[in-house]
Image 1 (tube, rainbow, N blue to C red):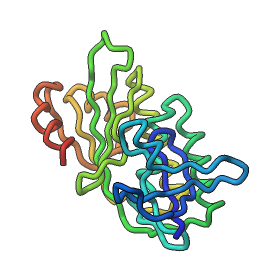
Image 2 (image 1 turned 135 degrees about the horizontal axis):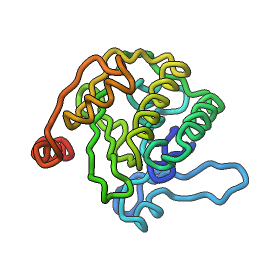
Image 3 (image 1 turned 180 degrees about the vertical axis):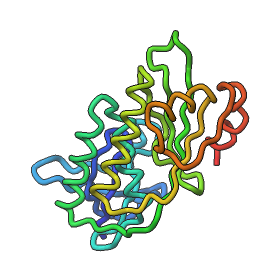
Image 4 (image 1 turned 180 degrees about the horizontal axis):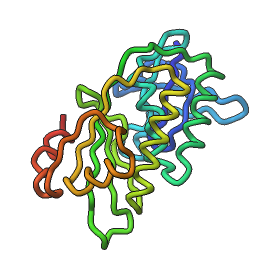
Amino acid sequence: MITIAYNERYGTLERLYFAGLDADKRPMWLTLKPGEPIVNTVNSERILGRQVYCHLCLEGEEASASVIVRVLGLALEVRPGSFAMLMTETLRELRAMNVRWKKEPVELVFTVYDEGEEDDNRYHLTVRDGVGINMVTDAYFRTFSDTVLAVTLYLSILRKHTGIPITGLKLRAPKKLIANWKKKSPGAFNDYAAFEDESDDYEDRHIIDFV
C-alpha cells in the first residue's frame, strides 16, 4: 500500500510504502524517493521525538479539501518569507503525484495576536477551519503589512489554484488590529470577533490549542 504524506517539519510531500508493523506494533512507512536512501519514518520520528509525517491520502484516492488547505498552509509556518513559492511548488508536486482532491466548501477562521513592539516577530497568526482543525498552526510576521499580505496571498492561491470554495472567512484579533485591517483591506472577511488583548483571549486560546 502506498500513501501520499506531507512532512510537517519541511512542508514537503512524500510517497510512502507500508512495510508492516515494527516490534512495538507501530506502522512502518518507507520513503520512496528515486535515487535517495530509503528512510523508515518511525526511526526519524523517534529521533525527533514527535510526529513528522501525516497522511494526505492513499495513492489513487481523493484527498479531502481541508487536508489540501492544511498542506498549503504549512508554507506559512516553515517558509514565511517565501511561502507563496512553496505553495506553488506544493501544488506542482500534488499534480505530479496525480493527487486529486474533493471540492468541499471550507470555512476558515484567522486569529492574529499582537505580541507587542518588543517582539521581532510581532504578529502571530493561526488558521483553523470551521470545526477547529489547524490549517496553519503558528506563523509569525514582523509587521502588520506582512501579515495582511500573507493572508491575502494565501487565500488568493487557494481560490485560484485549488477550486476549493471558501465559503466563510472570519478574523479574530484585538479591536485595534481589526479596525486597521478593515482600513487596509476592506471586505477581506465576512465576520469579525474582537478581543482587547492577548490576556483577554488567553483562556479561549488555551482551550482551542488542546482540542
